Amino acid sequence: MVYKVIFFLLFCISNIFAQENRQIIDLKQLYKNSLKDNHKINISNNNLIIDDKLSFKIDENKSKCLIGFYCQGNYNSFIILEQFAKKNYDEKKTKKNKILLDELEKQKKHKLNDAMLFQLSLLYFEVLKLKKDEALLKNRISLVKESLELFDKRKKIGLKEEDDLKSWKTELENTKNDLKRVTNLKKKIKEQLSYIAKINLEDKILQDYHMQSKEFTILNETVAFYLNNSQKITSMTSKISDYIIDNNIDIKTLNYLINSKKSTLEQTKKYKKELEKSSEDNIKQGKNLSNEHKPWDSKKFDKVIEEKLPLYINAKITQKEVQDKALLQNLTYTLSNKKIKIKKNVNDVLKKIVSSYKTINNTSISSNTTRKNFVFIKKLYDKANIDMKTLLDSQNSMIISKKNENNSQYDYLENIIMLFYNTNKIRAVFNNSEKKQLETQIF
View 1 (cartoon, helix red, strand yellow):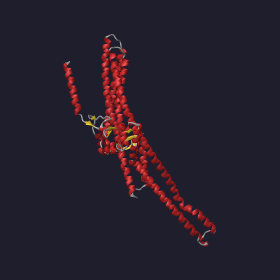
View 2 (cartoon, helix red, strand yellow):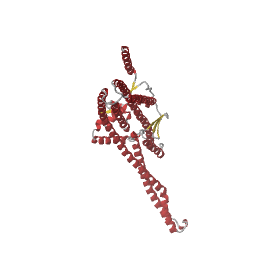
View 3 (cartoon, helix red, strand yellow):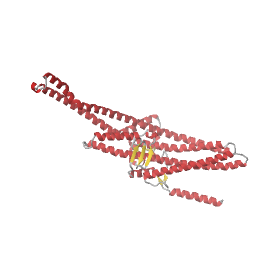
View 4 (cartoon, one colour):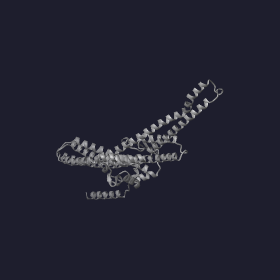
């Protein structure tokens, strides 16, 4: 027995040293490495595709609150805008056109990379969730084994519970299967992260984060601190929306196209006046012609010229003016809708942050309550005062509550990432300059 104890202690000590020797990788390193590799990124059929090797289904619940390319609709509208700009504004014609088209191309690549970083963040937090799930399932296996040992004691005092024995064994087997499934899923996601960041994460530990981690705070305060009442949420929605609208490439492009189209219509209006004057001059010249130069009766000729010539001359320019006015109306409508959507999405994300922050507190209370309840129920079970089902239900409640508590922390951090992503500052997680801009220009 002594040798077993010594062996167990040595095993624990070696395990501790092994943990210490394993390299810890944080989200910053994964961000930086993934951007170095120049991945080919595409958004298609609500999937984010990397190098035609990895495909991730876009999370619709998150994408509907986002402004960037981690949303099929946003990506599609950008591509249409880019194609329209290329078709109507040849970069060879003016320097402004070239600057606009170059900026669109640059921002397209930037937005695709940011969408990849957002997906990487979701994978990262999913691994952290699964790691906590593993610990809970291992704890559950230990609890079930303890219950099996208690079963033997209850049997010795004359309690016949053969059905309970089968239930405990089934529970143990199911929990082991759940653990295996969670471990395999965690391994798969770490492999995906390894490919994106070009770091072998198999034997690496991912840095854990919480809501007070400096990467996810603003001026050393949680983001929720700036949203602790409805007035602050409204104020922050306005400030963040204005910042996004002032810096968003789609908005800038639409404004450029609208101003350009307005200028075209002004030129058309001026040209039409010149044509009208020219038409009047031509009519006067026609009336001054001698009768031998007119192909038919002088009065009929003058009437045809006066009625038809202005229409003929203005026909093409009038048609183009109608088309340009319709296009200007569509561009203005698109711009207005985009601004409305930005404000709505910002407000939705801020509300998500507040909600998830409250959930952290609520799940913590629930977890503590169910844990205390389980301790009490287990004492009763030890004394053979309650049946196995009551104990198992209490154990399940405790495990589920703890899982919810764990997940609530990461859900909050995911919402912070959504906020950073919407402001085009997702790289603030590792880029001090972008973090400073967030803190000084918005908060």
